[in-house]
Image 1 (cartoon, helix red, strand yellow):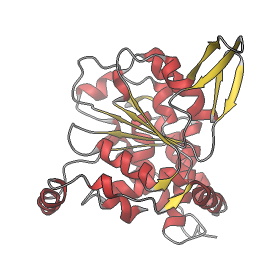
Image 2 (spheres, helix red, strand yellow):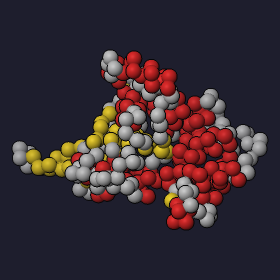
Image 3 (cartoon, one colour):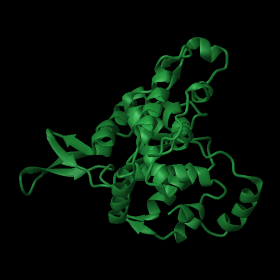
Image 4 (cartoon, one colour):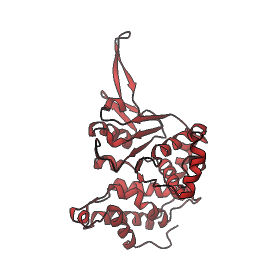
Length: 305
């Protein structure tokens, strides 16, 4: 699956690895970067690599919550209301430019992202597994955008930035992307049932007590830091450990190392942190504060068993 995605996203193996980790950890991915670096291409490549249902929602200012979750429509023939599913009824939901929709529409994703279900007119509909939301947003252009609320950001397991490609990869892209879109030739390499099996395998990965305490120590340190007004939530701790289990499995291990936790701390935790006004004025970012925390929290030794 990673090799398949890298046919479209060249020169960014770390980003592709993070995307697959989030998928196998049953999380949701937020791709935040400047325009034109392949945010939507990455989300589409991941979706097309799996033979499952995929829906794309283009978030616009006039998008309604019912467009996302679905709506009950009155059928003149049967004289009854029928439910018409919205865009979230798929295994992979690609939300393009999520911060262009109003907060009211963004909140329509809260229930499905956390509980894998949708409630419309007092009726609850379960979503099929696997279920993953891959959302993109542009952090530069602020006209006509709405910042994601804390509750929404906290539901994304990880945030990644693709960044500009290396020079060699960009030159190679000119040869492959100008003749045809490589997405058109991308074939599925797995299906939903296989992904469910892999998710089950990831769930069996062992996390020792020292590694669990290390993950909790990292998130607890963000809550007590002087330069952060909002630290990581308990949900963030769960996401960090689940992502570490997926990373360990992808590296061929049935146990989690502290390195699995520390290497994923930035993509899993940074987007949830809010700096204080004083820290912002001095140029400190949540990522820089988090790096300092990772450097100071003691790493457990001999914690594989």
